[in-house]
Length: 281
Image 1 (cartoon, rainbow, N blue to C red):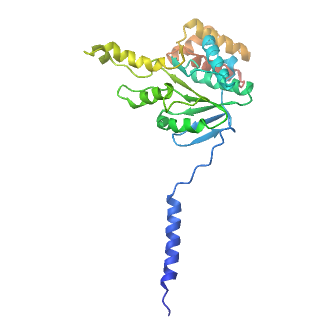
Image 2: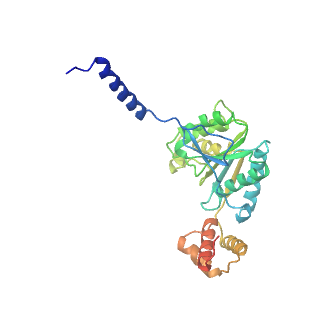
Image 3: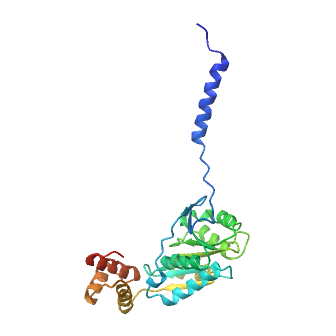
């Protein structure tokens, strides 16, 4: 019986090592075509395209006419390659902030041959936005980088500094073909505490510094809670659009059960009406 040669032992071992290394090595993500999709999602180190941007028709967004005009005008300027502002949309939940941004992008794409795209960034991916800007700056297309529901906690110093650097025109600022859109429940974005009022040095400076973060946006647009009349007017508009009948008392009871009046609650009620009537929206 002949023994195996060293070479015959070594080659299978090397093959197994190579196979193991291939399994351990991360697969390179596919190259992103930044001209192909209406929207993208940025993970912090890579992006994926979204084939269909889900957005309501602008006419369906009721009760925010002034806000709608400001946002749509600014997005159309960006889509056309004109000067445009970074935007902060702040205020009450459920009043259509993110829906309005998506709808405005859809309108910009319709009027400017897909010359603009939306890139959504989660708060956990903010640290990679500088790399995103470097990539987008090389693309012949305009982009609205969208951070939804942004809020920094009191002890978070890094997040606000990043946001300032992007907006202030420094070396990490967004390129000319990119603008930022941020939605937040707080105008100041950074949470505030009662300790600010007790600061023995200069309490006003602390508050002013946090509000100054919001002031760096060219457009700061407030979305305020619905009163009863506005809530009912939104329902009337939606119901009329779809030919649905409704009663004031029933609509008010719907909002009482949810403990809120907003555009979102109004739309949920209209969806309920459509379900009762056996129709699709």
